[in-house]
Structure formats: structure tokens, C-alpha cells
Figure 1 (cartoon, rainbow, N blue to C red):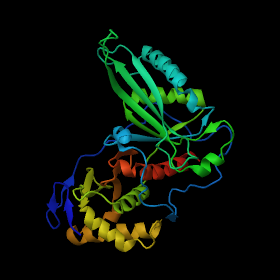
Figure 2: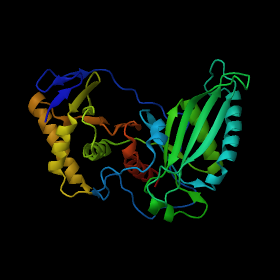
Figure 3: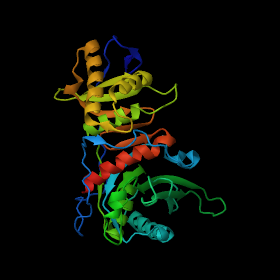
Figure 4: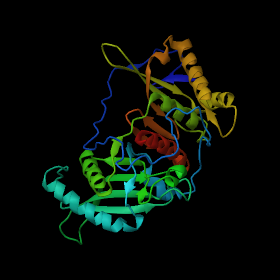
Length: 348
């Protein structure tokens, strides 16, 4: 296995440590306890650290890659959402009209971002039936906010300023155990200004009696992600797999970047995984321990004493703050399956 540090230095060269601390983004104006006023809804325990996951490490999506292209290579901030009460996909046009009025009212209060030349925000809602794991999952819902840049309808151009989408991928058991009039779309992903996220979230909370919470990703789940994504087939020119660690209890913040060639990481994973289609906690632990041991042999640093804060692969990148970037449309559904599981765990 070849190992290189940030900046492309080969194994055995001087260790590069970045001293800049990464600032955690605020949670905007959304809050919530994650508890529902109508009693327990779920009959299955979705634990954050299962002993094994009986699902393929990479689930191929049947969706048209061109339709999913707008989701790729953008940073999406993650939220968990409790089930929506009396929500209907058939009413999306009416919801968009109502949300547009709400956004305008909040802007009058000065709660939204003021943009020079802004003449109004248009809200669009649409269904994304491609983004689900089975027919039992509700279709994903996309919400988009655009600005008109001209007072003349003929010359008017719209600029997309905010996007958010709700989804539930492979949440069959959850949907089956929901009381009547509830829709489970537990994962909410946002790209855009936090002020608009707060406004949109507030409208959904008031309209559908739901709660939003920022969805962080624990170091343990980051190790699951890097192990699962390492096993996926990617292009030969794919970028290195990169792990970013923060070093605790130092006078000055310190980050360590650890990069591994994807073919080397895949070869290691193939020696660790015992049963195709199943990934166990033991396999994840062994995989990470091998990477840590290799790093220690070269640099005499115990990565087990640090905190894993970000993983980047050819499939996706994920940060512990709850920020993700999708890179491959064919693996989008597989990544969303895991994120849906984490979101459900948080709202139980």
C-alpha cells in the first residue's frame, strides 16, 4: 500500500500537519428535540453502531445520471426530520405557493439574506421518485428557491440560491409502522444560506408538526463509510482516499491528512471482508487498524489517539459536522441508505 500526506508527498517523507482549525458551522435557525408529540412511531431499533449491516456496500441506482447530476459535487448539510403530519406529494404546488408567501413575509422582517437587485423569491417543489430504495419508500421531495433579477417578465432571469431535499431510502420498516397521516422523510439535505434554511425549516415545522436537528456523523460512522466506499469500483484515475484527523489536547489545533491510493485500499479491504454483501464491525475495525499500523510504521504517530473528522473517497466525502458531497451518481442510493439509517437513529 502506498501512503502519502497532503500535498502529494510519498510515504517516508516529512509529515505535513495543518495548523488551521476547522470552524463548526452553526445550526442556523432550526432546532428541535427530536421527540414527537404523537407517541413512539418506530418498531425497529436503528442503532448507530450495529454489529453488521446486511446490505451491499454499494447499491447501484437505476436513476438517470443526468437527472441526478445537480446533486453531485455540492456540499450538502445534513438534518434529521421527524415524520411529517398530513403531508401529501399531490399538494406540492400548493405547498410551494404557501412557502413563497411565508418567505416573502419573513424577508419583510429582515430575516433572510438581502441581495442587491433582488426582486422576489420564487419557490418550486417537485417530486424525485428516483431517489428511493424501494416502492415502499415515499418519493423524495426537492425544494428550490430562486431569485428574479429583472422587473420585466420578458427579461427576467432566475438564479437558484437555495436547494433542499427530503428523502427516505430503504426505510420500509419505518413506513410500515407509521400511524395514519404521517409521512417519513427523515433525511433533509441543504445547499444554500443558513438564513433561508431557517425560514424553510420553520415553515415545515409549523405546517407539518415536525422537528429538524442537525445530523452529525460520529467518527465510528465515518470509519463505516470509508470501509464501505473503499469496496466500490471506481475509475482508475480516481483521487486518493483521504482521512483527516484532528489532534486533541494541544495548545494549537492540529490536523493530520492521510492519503491512500484507492487500488491499495481496495486490495486491503478485499483481504479483510469475509462475506460478500455483509460488512461487520469487526471487519471495519481490522481495516482501520491496518491503516493505522501502516501509518505508525512510517511516522511513529498513533492515529487511534486522534479524532477522525473527515473521509474522502471517489464515491463521496463526509465530514463529522454533518456535511457530505456526492461524487458518483451510480452510488448515490447506496450512500443515502446509510444516511437515512443515521437520520432515523437520531429521531427515535
